[in-house]
Structures are given as structure tokens and as C-alpha cells.
Amino acid sequence: MKTLVVKTHAFGDSLLATPAVAGLVERGDRVTVLTGPSSLQVWKRLPGIDGLVQSPAPCSAVKLLWWSLANRQSGFDRVIYLGFSSRAVRWIEFLSGQKVESGGDPETGFGVVRPVARDYCRIAGVQCSSLKPLFHVNRSEIDAVERYTGGKSYVVLAPGGARNARDYVPLKRWPMSRWAEVSLYLQARGHRVFLAGGKLDKEEISSVTGINLAGKLTWGETAALIAKASLFAGNDSGPAHLAVAGGTPALVLFGPTDPGSLYEDGSIVPVCGTVSCSPCYANSIFPGCSGNEDCMISIDTERVLYTLEEMLQR
Image (cartoon, rainbow, N blue to C red):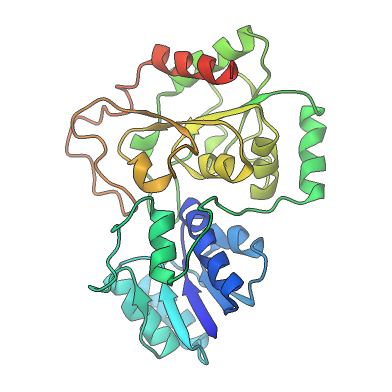
């Protein structure tokens, strides 16, 4: 069966969808993935993909229309959209010329099971033996990272994040001053600390002491850095999902987002906000804060340090 799978954003969400797409490949489907720029690296690294199409989405309606007219997709036996937006479904039907199966179908639904990786498998109609995200790291990326680390033990912090092609949710970030306290605590106990993130994170996290590699590494090198770490700690963002993919013990901080919707039980150690309205959303566009914007602030520094110490002693 020739199958088109659409997952255009974002990097972390696409990582969560890799078990479902891998299940289609294992079943024998010839899978083409339609993706966007922010998650291209995820699908380039998934073994067995038959084809890869990069759209500019999300983007302006005019730009998307012109791209769609020039890049109509045809010849597929099945079209699956791993999402629930009715607008996206209409676009994909225009692009492919056929009915789209999605989480927006009344008989399918979205968010029926948790975490979302299991929901993606259900929408795709495959049995997934594992929900672990799949992200292959090559030897050259490991070697590039070892030039920074020297092959010695270290911890990775990711104080930034919360950015993707669809929206930016700074309320997912824990205050930098508290990350600075965490880094100093770890260094005082003899741990080397590396800071991971994107180019836009570099200046924002510069107040946190440590070896700041934000913006210096590719996604593959970032994955290699995290995979070789003795511990990862960060906000709910792409690097946290890479920690799960790499099997690194990970402490992840949650305010507005729901850990049970995004991570399989046991894959991370979650530390959540304590305000009554948290979490307020899961795998969707952030609706905006209706409270006092203090869910991440409610996470106490001592609580994070205590949890990290427990993890380091295991």
C-alpha cells in the first residue's frame, strides 16, 4: 500500500509520531511523509521511508496555495493526517485529491488515548510495540560532540525551548534565575554542565553558567550530546523528547502542558506546577493563559534540586 502521512510540525510532535510511522513501514506500507521545515530532520532519520516531501507549512495562506498548486500529490492508496485540524484536512484533501483519515474524524477522534504517541498509532491503524521516539544519530555527530565533551561525564540543561513553527509559549519556561541556581548546584558537586538549545536560546540562557552550546549544534549533534549525558534537565520542549529518544534519565518541568499527554509513563521524571489551573492544554495550539501566568513559577527550586539529587544517586 502506498501511504501518505502528513505531520508538518513541530520537531517534538513529529518525534512523538515516529513510532506510528515506523509501524506502517514495518507492516509493509510504502510511506511518504509530508512535513514542514521544523521537523524535516526527524523524518530524514527514520529508516524505511519511501519518500519525503517538504512543504512550507505553517505559513501564509497565499504561499501555501501557490506551493500546493505546484506540488499536488497523487497516486496514494491512503492519506493519513496525524492531527485533528479541520482546516488542515481540507488542505490535504485539496493537495492529494482524496479523502483524508485523521484524528478529526468523528469515528476516530483525537486525544482518545494517552499519551499522544499511542493516539498516533491508533489513528494510523498500527500496533506499536514501543512508543519511544526514533531519532538516529550518526558517528560523525557523536565525534563532533566529543570534541566539546572530551568523552568525560557531564549533565545537560535545556533552559530554553518552547518555540516551534506554529506558536511560541514562553510560559512553558522556568525562570532563568532558577536554572542558574540549578547549574551552580550541579557544578558545586563536581558535575560539568552543558547548555543545549537553538540559536534563539543562546542569549536568553546566557545568564545560566555552563558551557553554552545553544545555536552551535545541529539537531543531530544536540541529540548526540544529550544521549551521552549522565542526566538531562529541561523544560517541556524538543530537547526533552530527544532525551527520551536517547534513553537519558530526564527531569522535565511542566506548567501549562500535561506530561501524561506527551510522555509515556516512566520515560521521564516530571516536575509539575502546583496551581489549580495547570495543566491547561496538551497537544494543541496554546489557548492563552487565563490565570496569573504563574504555573512554572510555582515550581520550587528546592524541589527540583532534591529530585535531581535523587536521580544522580540512582
